Image (cartoon, rainbow, N blue to C red; front, side, top):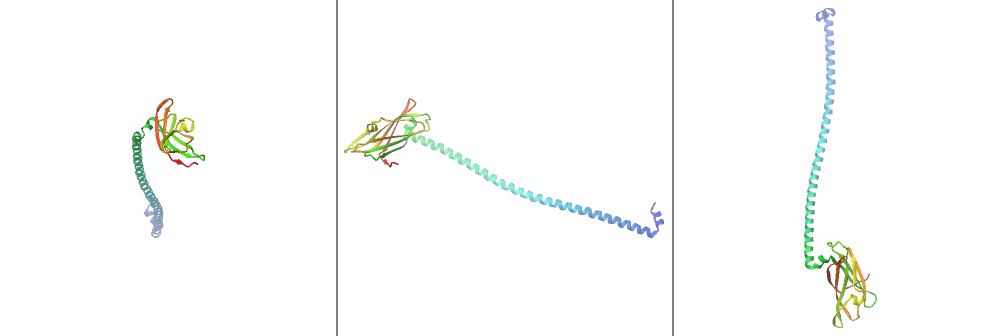
Length: 232
């Protein structure tokens, strides 16, 4: 059925009225569909905007964290480099000091490098008995000698008696013989003795014969001023 037949069948008025209704309905449907589609697109656009803003803020926060971490890494790298430089300088200083110590030890006490023995402590205490004394001697092993050291220590006490120079050996004062030692790392020797009433002590000369096993390493000589310490 064509346009003319419809017009003749319904009449001009009804036909135009029907056409208008169809046109309005079509327009309404088109408008509703367009509005709905536009609303969905607007909602989608808003969601995309929100997502974009969220991503932008997240990216800004990540960028800030990256910048902070980059600065911290630079500081850590600089600190580590400075520590490495300071450590290197300290090690070089230690090597230099060891060389200086070795040099002065050779000059001031050449026997130490040969014997490996050092006197780390020396003390004389007066006991409650008249003219009766207690001697304490601490022997220390030097770094270069790692084996057990052994030997004997002899002491000579020099001073004056009745206005004349006089010397006594420790063995003559106690009849016990020379002090014997055998140790690794350190050892303390202790012995008591009696001095003559009129004798005034001034200094003590210590002589040690040092052996490594049965091989003699050398002889150590050390002089101390006579000075009494307080007994514990």
